[in-house]
Length: 153
Image 1 (tube, rainbow, N blue to C red):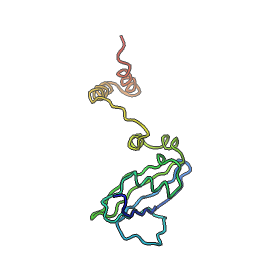
Image 2 (cartoon, rainbow, N blue to C red):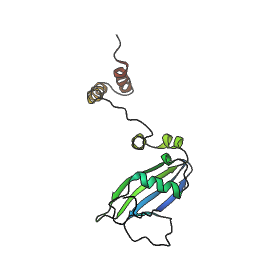
Image 3 (cartoon, rainbow, N blue to C red):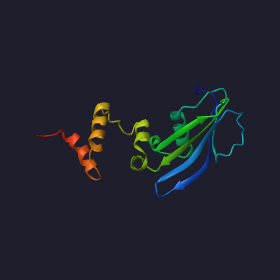
Image 4 (cartoon, rainbow, N blue to C red):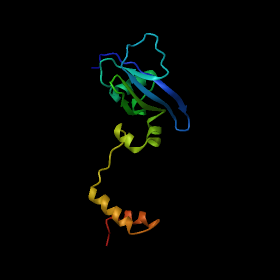
């Protein structure tokens, strides 16, 4: 499937120095590829393909924007339009992986393989919630921490 033509254009591109990243909106389209395409809006043209994988998008964006580490690119919220052939989503390119780890939400880091998910049992979560319901204010955190300490006697 990777042998078919895919073209990417970025839209609403801006550089955010406060968060050390470049941010843009990504659009995928299945249309004939024009030869004089200006790459200012991210349109992914993929004729005959239902979608383009996020890994493939990250590789192409890394080539377009000359990014050294593809792990600093995050693409998310892709929605395919009715009839297929066109999808829209968002993308962020951080200056470094350290900045990405600093500013990105934990769930996106887990999806991109930069962090691991902590598995907690459902019963532990419910017990902690019910313990915190019995106290008010700042003591709620202490009630949650008691569960972590293991009730030492």
